[in-house]
Image 1 (tube, rainbow, N blue to C red):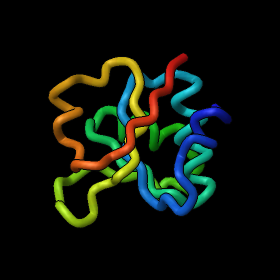
Image 2 (tube, helix red, strand yellow):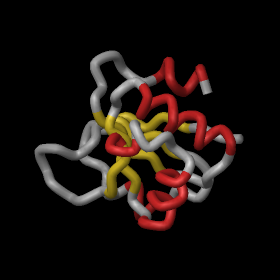
Image 3 (cartoon, one colour):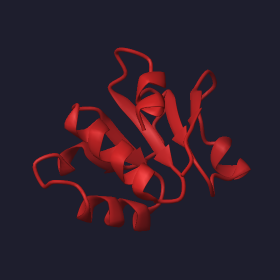
Image 4 (cartoon, rainbow, N blue to C red):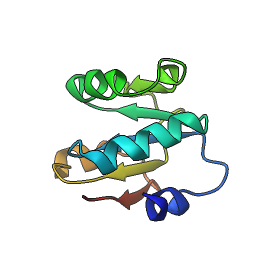
Length: 101
């Protein structure tokens, strides 16, 4: 978890999170929300599961991805189950940071 969190560029205020939900995934998302970093997910089922496992005071930092050119996350945290199709959703110049159990 620490390696992934330390890989996120300083000053990042929003990340897109996509991958199989595991203890590592929940820890990463919880820590990012605690730090005040907006975490955006693509899938509604992941959003629902993450929201249930995050303290209610930080749940406002968790959101669903909506394509908008100027506000797209430039940092993508990607794990297992991340598809090529999803990769093409990223804006040019995005940074991909892998995570895994």
